[in-house]
Amino acid sequence: MFTTRTRNTTRIPSVFFALGLVCVQIFTLACQASQGSEVTPARKAEARSIRTEDPNAVTIAAVGDIMLGSTFPDDTRMPPKDGADLLKEVSPILSAADIAFGNMEGPIIDGGASEKCKPRAPAPNATPTPTPLPSATPKPILCYAFRMPTRYAKHLKAAGFDVLSVANNHASDFGEAGRASTRKTLDALGIKHAGSNRLQYSTAYTEAKGRKVAFIGFAHNTVQPNVNDLAAARQLVTAAAKKADIVVVSFHGGAEGVIAQRVPKETELFYGEKRGNLPLFARTVIDAGADLVLGHGPHVLRGMEIYKDRLIAYSLGNFATYGWFSLKNETALTMILEASLDADGKFLTGRIHAARQEGRGIPVLDPSGEAIKKVRSLSQLDFHSTAPVISDSGEIAWRP
Image (cartoon, rainbow, N blue to C red; front, side, top):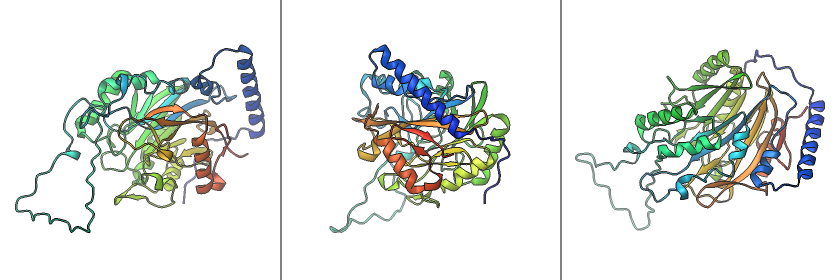
């Protein structure tokens, strides 16, 4: 079913690598203990950040959905201190990575109207809607349109973000004006963006450790690269692989909510919309040349697997979604995924930094490690033989 990759992916001996990794971690912890200085939770997480003996390895820190507040339809859901402290606790981890990546859930724009939530006048000569019977339950009318102020983008830069996906079902909440404002705002800050549309802005290129790294953003609509169009996905990845040393694919796909934590091996539907056969999509893009696949969209964490020495994370969940979502239990869990890739893009090692959203949507590190347990359990349930080994402290390794 899947084609064979042609890229050279010589395997590093796993046993010697694992022994070296343990030695480095023990030495690091011993040095910290001898210093006796105060260590904040964020700095503890940074100190436990992944280590690799490969000096050319590229470390990518990735998170899920970001929406730091929305002024639409009013400002009642805006954060305190104008959002300045929203990412304070997680910034050290993001800033320490060679590349920090996330999904920008919605446009960055200061005004405008949303066709999505615009009141619609009844059509001429339309038949009046009958009054429902007392026993009938009226269907609730919900409209979610997001609009993050342009001034908030500086918080993303300060937190350490280098690349953002802008391919998702909220990116077009304010039409092309919203997409254009998002691109302009991120460009001004030097933050790369991927997936704004499938014709011109699908792929972003950046550099790390002397390597050129490509990011391609996919969603499930007609404007952006579509997870359901496998032929087009192959073409985009193949083209990027010719220009870059490492190719990262981001997708916004899958059903939503607590009932959508599992990854089915078939096309997912949500309110009748096709949101991708995600295992097929992920393996297809890896066959075409992708080296890391990062998923988001279900608003919950999902499992991971390794395919051809490449890591696939099927959903990184909500990350910083202030004011709009009900955040409790599974929907409040989040994480920062660190993945270290060798010069050819092969997965070396990784780490899950467990976190959760507190209050109305502030990401904080979670010493209980609930996100680690959740991802490990889901990985075993859905992928078993291809699931990575995830330790209690969040280290991710692949079996020898």
